[in-house]
Length: 302
Ligand code: INR
Image (cartoon, rainbow, N blue to C red; front, side, top):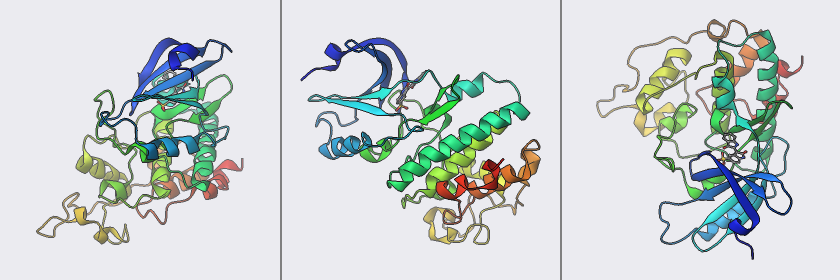
C-alpha cells in the first residue's frame, strides 16, 4: 500500500482543526489539489480505535454537493490521514473580509449560503449523522461559484468531543445550543439547527451573535436576546440539573429578562427571514425547526 508521502506532495499548512493539522496537498499522479487532515488523538499510545475507523469509513459514502467530499482514508499504525476535497476559503475568513452589516446584495448571498448549509445538514440528518460543532470556520466556500460546503461532519462522534483543539485553542461555545450548555447529553439533530441559526445571524450582523466567554456567560448572552430561561420559556428545563443551584435559585440569569424582538437586531431582514431565524433559535430543542422544514420556509420562496 502507498503512504501519504508517496501519493501526495504537501504544499502548505491550511490550519489546525479540532483533531489535527490540515494541509493543502497535490496528488502526484493526477495533479489533483486536496486537503489532507492528519488525525492525532489524545491517547495515541493505543493507536486509532477501530470503531472510529469504521465510522469514518461510512463518511466516505456521504455524497452531497454541500458536504466536503472525503476522498480517501490513509491508515497506518499510529496515524490516520483523511483526504478531502479542497476549497479556497472558509466562511470565517469571508466574514472577516467584509466591513459593516449586510446590505441588500449581501442578503441574497446570505440566503444562498443559508440554503446550502441547510441542504448539507438535511442530507446528514437524513442519514442520522450529526455535526455537533457547526461554525463559520468549518463552512468552506468556493467564492466565484458561490458554493458552500460543510467540513468536519461526523468526526465528533468518531473521536469524541474535545475540550481543547489540537492547537490548544479553546473550543468555541458561541454556536452551542442552550440544552447542551445546560448539560444535556441527549444529542439530537436539533443541536445542529441552533448552530445554523447562530451562523445565519452572524452572516447578517457581520459579528458573532452570542460570543460567550464561558458557559454561564454564553447562557447570559443568549437570554439577553431570547429572554430568561424558565419553565415557561423553555419547557423541560427543570429536567436539567444545572438549571438551579443547591439553594434552588436560578443561577444563570436571576432577573426576569423579556425577549428582544429579532427585527430590532436585524432591521434589514424581511419578515420571512425574521420568522425563520426565530424558529431556528428556540430554547426547546423539540420546538426548533428541522433542516427539512427550514428548506420549505417562505424565506427561500423568493
Ligand atoms: C482552507 C482551509 C482554505 N481549506 C483554511 C481549510 C484556509 C483556507 O481548512 C480548508 C479545507 C479544505 C478543509 O479545503 N478541505 C477541508 C478543512 C477540513 C476538511 S476540516 C476538509 O475537517 O474542517 O479541518
